[in-house]
Image (cartoon, rainbow, N blue to C red; front, side):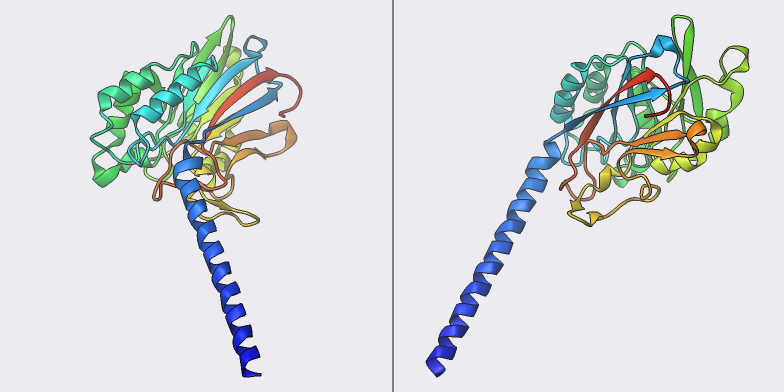
Length: 304
């Protein structure tokens, strides 16, 4: 009898040990995948949207969005160069960057080289950017909003801080607006989206809004913007089956990733949250690939 109990215990211990080893191996494999695989596996998302307010001259306009590059946090200039080469092959009409160029300042990421690489981006209707929360403080506050703004401007970007600009094609125009960061800046919807940048005869033009934090959409919905492009959340960066994002930052919990609709159908604001390119805190991504987004805008009924 004692021998049978002893054999049973040994069998149980062997199964328990095998289970523990299997779990450890799975966790190790997931860690390797998250740290060395998925975070470099950039997904190109293609999104087609229709707006009745889009001028016919802008029908078919292609917009590429990048966000949250976080240079210095285990992502370096060589990765940025590869990304820009891929982006240029998309032949965008307009390019937007929605904040967090740096995560920390690194000796490997010389500013002159970053300016050169970002300057290689081609977009005939312009390159546009807003600042993110990391652009304000950087590693040990060695980076500042003024520095990031200067880098982007030297690379040919128009950095929008609570302001808007008109973009023309033929006899038609659209408005591109941008607001300051919600965490460390002072976003002002009135200055960015007010009637001062209206079109001909005071009519409100189609408005593309850039805002680092997606939850600014709750404010923007009352100012007549048509499409808001945001980042900030990284899509959660680490997502678990059935549970979703493990951690979400301030002003990023409501519109975590992808397309969202705010407001009634006749005055609906579309909000798209890009998962970003880089990482922060931990250099891992799990079930949440980095993203570059290609939008094709069409003139048509509804906002799809």
